[in-house]
Image (cartoon, rainbow, N blue to C red; front, side, top):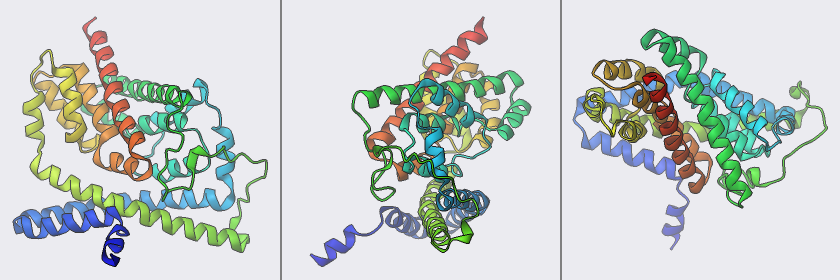
Length: 339
């Protein structure tokens, strides 16, 4: 009985990490196990500056009381707020992992889920650096289309989520361990001015330290799990395999591109040469765009980060929005290119 209660208390992410690590260590050849270890360590090292900076930003906002100001700015449910969130998400320099602490802080501050969903969907698809690389690796026209697609998918997701909430759905999107009530609470709107020099107050310093450590540990374990899974996908689902699936144009190219993009996509930067090769092999522009957008939103780090924060229905809704939105923008782009 005691043992059962002890097992139930084990963190699911930590348990998954341990089981996968054991499987890799004893189930894979030595060379592949070391390759997985190197990939995971290198990925964690690469994302660590963004993780620390994002956690520090979230902790600073909490300690200074600025999260309530943010809650006031984004407290509206209208399409203008959703449009602004989509635009900022598509143009912001945040990566899909680095933005997660900000998303968690926004939800906990009472920012409505539709605006957060719009930002969440748009952010992984495009950022300024990726725009430049897409221009170089594909074309300026494709880069512009991908940017507009990010904004469109964000708008679509935000408005669709708003409709669901109006019908009574998603009243408490956050998991209990993330927030006691999240955006199911009324927005924490306050006229109290933030104390930007929070370090002058002992209580706020303690709040900063606590929030920072909690955020780093919480996101760190999920990112570790994400990169461990990604290391296995890199070895056993190579780009050449994906190219064989999607290299030929057909009636089913667009939905197949979305379906393949969900599990096969690694990250936006690695996808550029992959998609370039696919298009050279005969892949149409519409499916290529759909593959990139669906894959960006549902890439392992982005998807696991969403799964870590929200309840299962919201997570499944997130995936549905990514797939449906990608189908629509891919179709529109294909029609445009055929004119």
